[in-house]
Amino acid sequence: ETMSGASAAKCCVCNEKKDSPFISLGTRACHQECLRCSACQAIIKRSLCEKDGKFLCLDCFQSLHGRNCAGCGQYMIGEVVAVSGKEFHPACFCCDHCKNPISAATGRYTELHGKRACQDCRPLLCRVCNCKCSESDLKMADGMFHRECLKCHMCSVQLGADNCEVFNHKTFCKEHAAEARGHSLNLAQGCAACGEAIGDDGLLAMDKQYHRACFVCVICRRPLTGKFSEENGKFYCIEDYKDLFGLNCYGCGEEISHKYLVVNGNKYHSECARCALCMHAFKAGQYMYMPGVRVRVHPQCVKCAGCGAAFSAQDACYMKPNQTDAFCAKCKPADGVHLSLLPALKSKEVSDAVAEAQEEQHLKQQQQQQ
Image 1 (tube, rainbow, N blue to C red):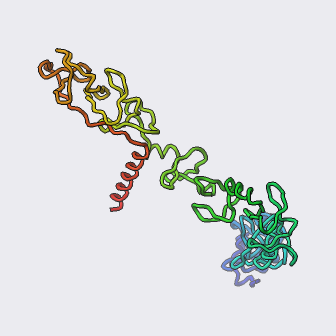
Image 2 (image 1 turned 180 degrees about the vertical axis):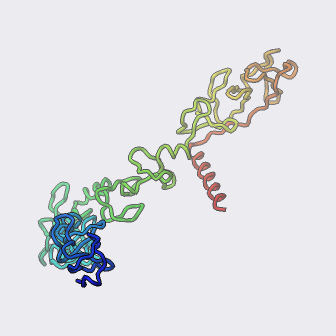
Image 3 (image 1 turned 30 degrees about the vertical axis):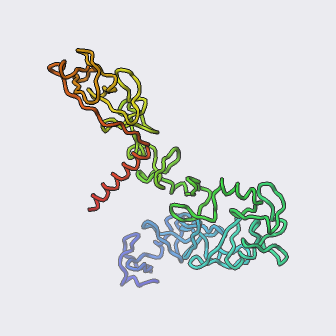
């Protein structure tokens, strides 16, 4: 659209007012000879494009910033169909069999061996090769099959309708179908985390399948690519699992992975809780004297260092702090400390400690919500 020089404002390109015709650009105006493509410098006479404040002709805009159709390879302007990271002209995204366009909004389709099939064509195609079938081909519960395509994917034996199973668009004999299901992702089922379809980036874990990006630690949300731990259907990286549920021996400091003993509220490997006198390990159900933080003794191993008398569970026992010499009431030293028998030792499984930690965590979450 042109306007007279008298009524025109200054040119938005050269910032001058001339008598030559102006081109109206909405709230701006430009001399016709100033409206040039910033890339090829040609005067733009039609199809003006603007990018980052610069004018471009249509050809330069498409070559610099345009998008190519994944179907025909030509530039796209206006409406596009985006599918799996690719973009198409609406007319180019079509069924490879009937050539009818597939609507991005309402159309459903399947893709096998690089060929798309609309919902109308899919029932007529062989489930193995994705090509059209005839009336003489086999019609089974899983769809149509060419007779020559009905072979076991693993052993190549010819199959019939009575001994064929379909898994992940492939046909198997009954023996190899069970083997394939046990070691392969099931493309007919979605990700156990997000529910979306599983592709080549899936993995199997605890009899379920996941996208690799969805298989993450419930605490730090990082993908689990190496060793991991599982509790009540939740997955943890090793570091977070140890922080939440991990047990360390109070004696040696190493991780506890099996049964352990609880001694005065502390947890020990069974072999780390030993009598300081006889050096034999304590067993579940036994009592002990504990004169020091890391000094433990069997009651039957204790004798009075003064008179040599043996102790019974009813006798009072006195020991100096962090020493193993015991004294009866008659021989007790001035700095002797009275010791009581500790309760019977308890043996627990690591799963017991995990359950206790989970319950403690659950209570903390409830308190925070309140």
